[in-house]
Length: 198
Image (cartoon, rainbow, N blue to C red; front, side):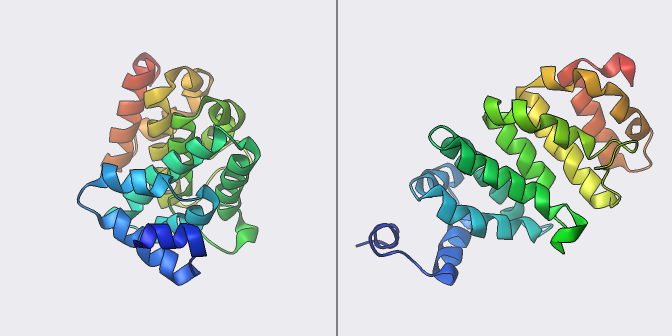
């Protein structure tokens, strides 16, 4: 009986599951590893995947973002409400009351919405609100705003039509002193046809 079968039949403790998820995120064949992750119950693997969002600068963070997008979008096909719970959990992590910082959460939200139209229709305005200084959801932390821009970039690659009404949100970032920010905004503009507006 391999580890995966044992998890399915007997269940696994939190630490064991986290170790297996970590191994999959480091696997040389990432696509094969994602196939394995998708074979697990989504609600079991999401928590350890979210744990890897806090590992900034670690390749597992970016892979965890991809994996959260795939797992949540796949879950939404059969259980939309559970997928919404994952979206709300990511949103909550960005709330001061959560006691955390929410590293990677906006980017994971963007990846989920890039992969599932229904979730994009419901939640895209919230993602854009994170970069709007005139709104109540504006992310004050520079690194979190960068995560939000990365999430938007992921979203608009698949769904550029969702960005149209938010063009003015990007104007303050187009002249940023941070080259990473300017680069992301430039790519967003090209994906959405907003280049002339920025």
